[in-house]
Length: 275
Length: 275
Image (cartoon, rainbow over all chains, first blue to last red; front, side):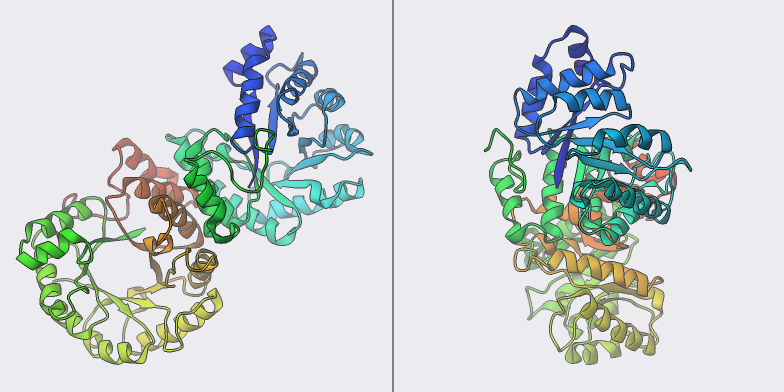
């Protein structure tokens, strides 16, 4: 599982406060903790400050990369904010996200053309949010083809089927899992990714729902996830789920994690702390 | 999820001792606790006493049914033991298990012919233990056809793909999940069942592996399981998994379980304690 650590998001109070007063310490600590817990990318999101988003997002990128050697996941629908973050980012970033929505596509494509970036390709178009796995797959196919046409390598595309809350539609979980399975079958060389915790929005004991969905997602072929890497129970469950589907030879990563009392390593990631 | 409570098994020390000294109290308590926790069947197994198995199995059945109103899952490969248990069982029992193995088939079929019983149909034949989902499916098809030919109703058949430990073969989990998915597709009116905890044999933190496998099994179409109903974490995870795949309308059973602080009800079962 390629883990994108979700904790540096300005919708979370400690991050918003750090941005307000320009205190880099909480941001650096969250970056280091997530990297140490096995994150391959540190998501940065300053979306709740639309007026200052470009400035704040670039600030977050520089602070994160001053302490960890892993890339950021630049999380914004705003081309201006993405541009500002890209200008200071070192290494190959993951842009979260592009979609078939015309405005989003037109604004973001110039930024990714010509330089290597990885992208989260969201299964969404101007026709709205797809419901069934088949609708998601149709959007994904068009989106992947267009991205490849722009020179993005297939290996650099993370398809996101778009997780909708279970509380608003009882089909959300099932159709998302079917979509992951279908996308994994149709695009075996691409990663599939999702923002796991969206599924549990509005329900009690969200961490339980997230864990169960993670296990089901792994079995359906999910290879990456945006999640809280400091949730040890969640990472334990992912390690078990990966062993169960046979993608952890001899349960080696599961056993290492068990012996270390949780926390890394989950086998396929290396953070600066461990390197 | 149709839950078969696995705790009254003579391989467990308190049960073996109870059998030895004829103390019915521990057996009755385990029966009541499992029924209260949502079990639809109470498994009884006295297999470690081959010389006295018929007598002990019948004793267990009568003691269990003296305190709970749910049927037993009569768990023995011995026709003599099954016969003795059936002679005292009230209601429709679940026999665990029949298979295509010639000796087992020939010995058990006379016992089930003519009276209504439910059966666990194990995907095994004299050709040995199947490995792939396709092999399991082929055995299941022959077995189901032969059972129906003997007058067993399709609704009364629980197909068990046969869970093998992950520690002995890294394909065990994946192939079992594929088998569950395939059997669910091919026999949509039948239940699929498995002995969940077999998967984690020989690995540390077995309960974690069992939970993760349960979530994956539910997503693959598993409708019944032989498990420890007193493992609240496991039942919590199953409730979440069922909500996630949309077979718990409006997450009603999940929310009821959450509000009650665990334990029943899981919605589709009623025990004597709750009736």
